Length: 125
Image 1 (cartoon, rainbow, N blue to C red):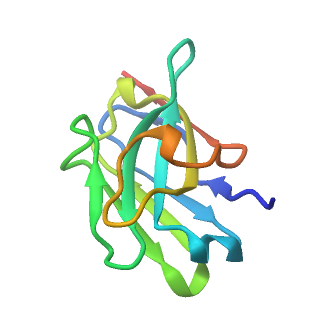
Image 2: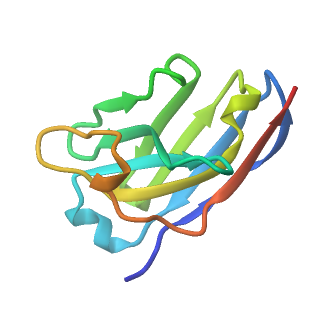
């Protein structure tokens, strides 16, 4: 199975911004949701944001509401996440994945595939 390809990570200072991109393959057409997940060293993977592909309805973890914006370009099968006002606790490897269930998206990594290789985000104080 072809994996998505994440990009756009980097090292920034607190308060800075990054825009992540995820190029997904044609198989995502059958997926209900696309989402962003992150994993910090020594911690479990957590859901950050997701989008219901048909309606464009978005879902965010409380920790990123008002700072991160997830969006999609269905024509390009590409997922984005604009991250503003970054904090050191946002540091981690970010992955995009497809999955979900009919009706809505849950930010549960178990509802999604494992994603690609990820892109590293490092925020310094």
